[in-house]
Amino acid sequence: MFSDALRIMDRNTVWYMIDEEKQERKEAEKRAEGAEKRANTVERKVSEQQQEIKKLQSIIAGLQRNKENQAQIKRQGKETGYAQKI
Picture 1 (tube, rainbow, N blue to C red):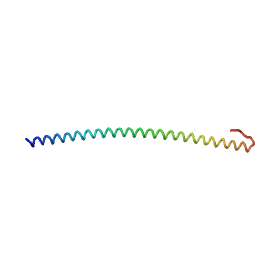
Picture 2 (cartoon, rainbow, N blue to C red; picture 1 turned 180 degrees about the vertical axis):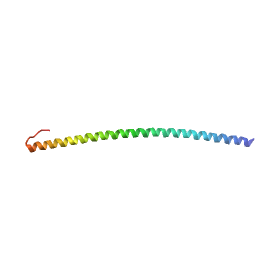
Picture 3 (cartoon, one colour; picture 1 turned 30 degrees about the horizontal axis):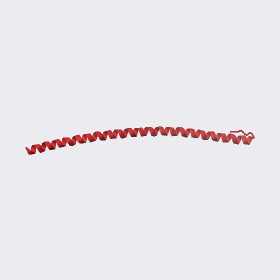
Picture 4 (cartoon, rainbow, N blue to C red; picture 1 turned 90 degrees about the horizontal axis):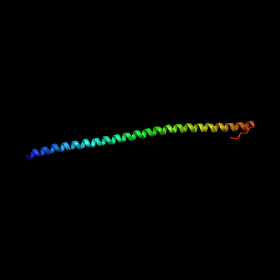
């Protein structure tokens, strides 16, 4: 009788431990899903920022070309004697 009680307790302990492991696994999966969502969000933001950087670099390049063109026009004006205020 005593050994039957121990056997039942052992079985119940095993089932309890299995249930605990299942719960821990579910919680770990939820944390992993959350981490994956955060990583995807960060990836998306990085991509958006990279696109914005490309746009800004393009704008900067255009402004630099414009500035160079203005300087060239100014030089040509001085060379020809026609000074244009830019």
